[in-house]
Image 1: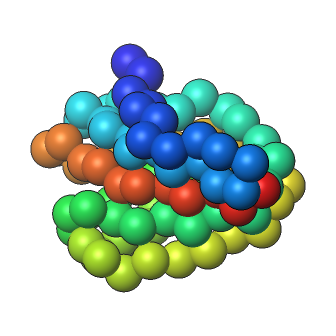
Image 2 (image 1 turned 180 degrees about the vertical axis):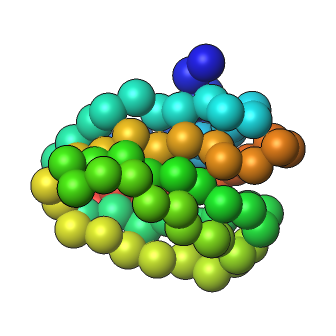
Length: 91
């Protein structure tokens, strides 16, 4: 099952995407072309799969974090409930 991306803003400086995950939904493996910020909308746990394996990350609503361009991973909703975050890519 795939996570659902909804692009809210896309211009020459940023792309803002709201990601909605049903339980077990995933983004599919992807590589980030730009530095980005993630803003969780609710508390929950995401499972991150990358070349080193799998790990779980606990996210807190409103507690933003940033990652550099080049991050390659698959993101999976590890919760028994729906999860969402906003991703802001800096071009």
